[in-house]
Length: 157
Image (tube, rainbow, N blue to C red; front, side, top):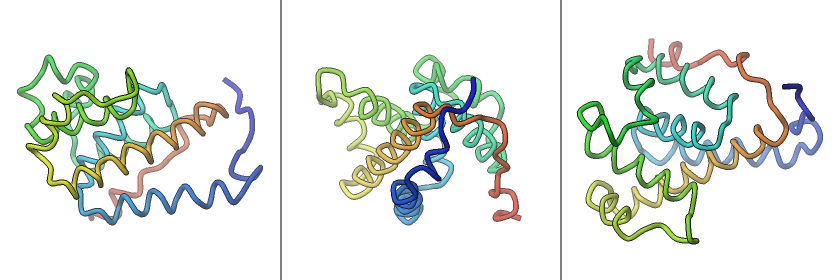
């Protein structure tokens, strides 16, 4: 797939806003590995190759196992691989991403609110909003995957 446009150069103010949103997510205090899992799963749902490449590399750099990466698309069928908090975050992320019938189901909210405080659930929602925004830019403009080099390994070393 050929890149349609380099949106970063086409309208720099839009691009400048995006890293600010991502930095706000980084400052939430949510576990970075949890945020990366959410980013990876949402990017799968949205079909964003660039973000899948990025977040799989970041997750591996954080020590994520191949099995959990391969199984995240079927996380409900593999509950032994993901903790309660991770499953609640993944359910919340999927519900907020797809907004079927223009709402997040009460059952998903109840599950998430058992694992996350009100502030954390707001922070998690910010993370979902951010990755959805990145996905939409990258999918719309066919941002090529494969060139991202994770900086996580150097930060954790």
